[in-house]
Amino acid sequence: MSEILSFSSSLSLSSFFAMINRKVKVFLYKLKKEERKMEDFSVAFRYAIQRECTLEWGVKRDRIDYNNLVFILKGKACYKIDDQELILSENQVLLIPAGSLREAHRLPEVPLTLQSFDFYSDQPLPALPQRVLTLDRLDFYLPLFQDFNRHWLTDKPLSRLHCKSVFYQILDELYQTAWAQQENPHVRQMKNYIESHLTQSITMEDLAWVSGLNVVYCGALFKQETGMSALRYWRTLQIRKAAQLLSEPDISVSEAAWQAGFDDLFYFSKLFKEIQGLSPKAYQRRHAGQHSSQ
Image (cartoon, rainbow, N blue to C red; front, side):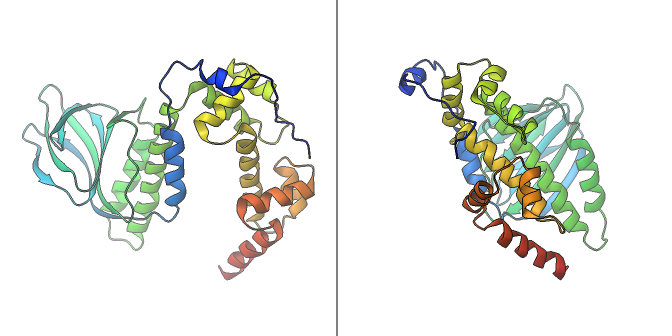
């Protein structure tokens, strides 16, 4: 089948790469590879608190055997991690990995409020792109902090399970933000276009237009930054959408394919098995069994 999303050129890709006068940002691709290894990632909490810190507040120098995730909600704090001094201010985040030497104190200029999570993980966490991550705002996180803290302080059944669920949302958003900050803005524009036009026909000309780049260069840049072609990214998202649909009862394979943007059922089935490891029918049967056992 001839794909819509394709391009050709007599120009060498190396000539385009030579035009890139900037540091190649590979964090996104590396982190996504790490993410694939962390599908069964699990945490156990040691302690969590949202604290308004007095002038006397401080953390004694010690080597921690757990991870520490700190959000500065207001004010400033000085952290020293492995003898590197870091000044954190409002809307900044610090992820301190297990095994680090840590100490901290409040700076006296303004009151300090922070949210802190101490947790163990069964796998090492990927490092954030910067030691201190700066967020535009905390609107997404504040309701999650409130929800987490409310359940953390109760002894109701499954309260810790609820805390885990909320914390995974926090981690997911944090890493998504880190990826977006490191990601090339042209690639982000192309991804946004693909995601918002997922079930429609997309051409490289569309992506070149939305990113303001040459048709050949935008395709080469996308693959360099993400490790996959724009075509593969588009089709992978469509297959994920179809898989989500097939996880629900009472939907046919052809209906799921159509809703995901495919009009060729044979090609859809072939690509689904390539990406998901199962044929659409087998995938549907597996999830049907899960539904019936619930």
